[in-house]
Every structure is written in C-alpha cells, then in structure tokens.
Image (cartoon, rainbow, N blue to C red; front, side):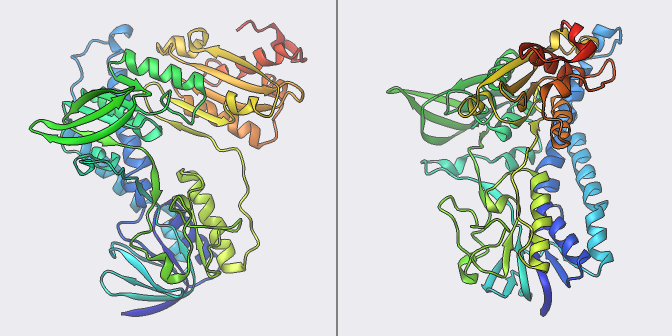
Length: 473
C-alpha cells in the first residue's frame, strides 16, 4: 500500500503529536506514523506512568503520616497489581483524551499507530514493517530516545528503567546504576514500595546536572530513607547472572567489590532512537554522540527533513519536545523562518524528596558572574510545618552587579511547583530579585519560601523591598 502527503511525522511522542497537529493546522496534508501507540515514551513509558507510580509512592508516605494528625489506620499495604491497573487506566485516558490528536484529525490529518519499525528508503519515502509506503515532500523525525548500552561483559543481564516500570511484582532488592533524574526516580519509587535499593553513581555526587547543594540534600535524604548511596564508586568490571538475580563486579582504587540484587537497572544516559530508521538512506547526518544533526531551524542535513525532541539530543524534556515539534512543523510547512532559541527551562523530579531547578547552578554561575546566594529552609516555612514536611530548602543565585536571578533550586515538598513559580516570573521579565521579593503570595503556601529567599538575597544586596524588609525569615 502506498500513499502521499505533504508532511509525514515519524513518531507520536510529545514532539511528534505537536508537530503533526501544527502541520495539519497550517493546512498541510499530514500523516502521523507511530511504531507503537500514540503518546510515545511520555505517555506509555515516561512522565505519565512514572508520575502515576511516583504519586502512589507519595500517597504511601502521606498515609504513614496520618498518626501524627490523629487519624488511626492500619499500616498501608501496596496492591501492586491494582497499581498497575491504575497506571494502564491513566495512560489509556491520556492517549484517548489527547486534544492534539483531535486537532490533527479535525484538520484532515491521519494517524497511523502501531505500524512497527519505520525506515527511510530515500529522502522522500519511508516504509513500515508491514510494507506500507509513504511518500512526502517533507518529513519530521520525532522518534525519541532509548537507554544507552555499555560495552561491559554481561550487560545483557541488566534492565532499563523501562523494564523497571513494567515489572509485575515489586522486587525484594535492586541495584540502580546511574543517578541522574531517571535513576533517582527508580530508586526513590521502589524504595518506598519496599525494595532494598543500592544506588551507584560514577561521578562525585548523585544528580550530577543539579546544584551541589541539591545533590547533597537528596543524597542525605535517600540514605535516611534506607537507600544505600555509592557515589564515585569506581568502574564496572562485569555483570553476572545469579540464582537470585544479578551480581555486579566493580573496582575502586584497585579494590574489587561486588553488589547483588534481584534486578540491576542501568540508567546511564539517553541516546537517539534512529538505528531502525536508516537516516543515511535519506542523507541525514548523525552527530558523534549519535543524535540527528540539526540547525537552528531543526532542519537536518537533508533540506526536506526536520527533527524534533529527544532525537536531536538538545533537551530531554517532554515540554521542550512539544516546543521543538511546533518549531519543526512551522519550518517544514512555511520554510525555515522560525529559529529555536535558548530559554530558561524548569525541570524537576518527583522523588522523595522532590527537587527542581531553573537557570544556572551556583558553580555554573560563578564561572561568568560575581554572585550572591540566599537560602531558606523548609523548617521555618509555615506551610511545610503544617504539613509535617520539614526536609528541604529554596536557594537563589543572584548576580551581584545587576541583581538578576541566575538560578533557583528547590528541594522538598512541591519543589516542582515552587520552581515553576520562579520560572514564570523570570519568563514574564521579573528578573531582579528585589522585584520577586515584593511579589504578592498567598499564606500559607509553599510558594512563600521563594519570596522569603528573594527577601534574603535582596537584603544581602541592600535593595529596597518596602515592608518585606521586616521579614526575618
């Protein structure tokens, strides 16, 4: 079977669905082709199911607090099969209620799901596993990413984070190798579910992309909750299958050690999912890191082919993938006219404790600025005290000369929401810390800690902040 279109979008994750919706909205005859179900990794294997599992972990932790507030119940027990049913229900609802899918179809676009692997035959033709051929003037590649593999003996005995999320039972023990955002979420969620977790990070501290204070606070909290944290652990020699699971052999400073678990989850990076696509057949170049090479218009080395989302290696976030999809579709339909621009990107993770950030870390900021920092702790935040959530802090990094906020970092309850407030203020042009210090905020809310911290920073810079100068927090 063969058909033609103006624009064919390959991949139906956040980038692909947005790209197809916008291309169709602009009047292009659009076909969205997906190897699996619409939604991609975000809906089927990423933020949606992961956040559902993380929300369950949060509910379990909240239930353990009930006795403090005079609510007497039995110790909460996890029905994992019922949880998996809920995850399936949530992901199905997200897919079915997608307004972008409705937008694609309402503008005459077509959605072809579960077609299997897709590959380029040439720069204007793709073929699906089932033999369907699609010809188009323009293509937008949004195939997402895959977990990186390591050239280590026995690596085939390890699992990915995707394998962890698809478990049908809670394992008694788990090794997690790599503690970026993904590894931290796996460790935190399964620790709450009752798994004995040993976490390994090769760099000097976990969450290597985060501010040092954030990484230290999360590591301390993890250890307090029973996770064994091994930072700067050395190098892995091999993985071996055992009757109970997997054994990892590793070496640190010449000393050989082992660790064992029912499961070994390796989360050491994210690469582009392009091998099956055969990009070279279409004249699409791949970078040394394995991602698709794109210019500022998200155009590949093949002028009629664009790429968006994780496959470009730019920013591995669903929100940024959607933005990429919009830009790529605009340029595919109307010509290369809309550049992708850098901007402040809030990011966070629903671990225990939560953490989030926007802007520069303190170390990054000090490389090019003279800075002042200010920090407020959850122990003195009214809402955190009410909720019995005293772990955490808010930290602001401010340029000493201009009083502009360079970074905001939060650890603790609702950290992602607090950072979102900071990101919106910065995006709206409220960049000076004294402006933020004067901003109105409801009492008692977690957002208050952001204002308290802005007050602290403004005082350090001897800035006029009106009645808020009386704050002592």
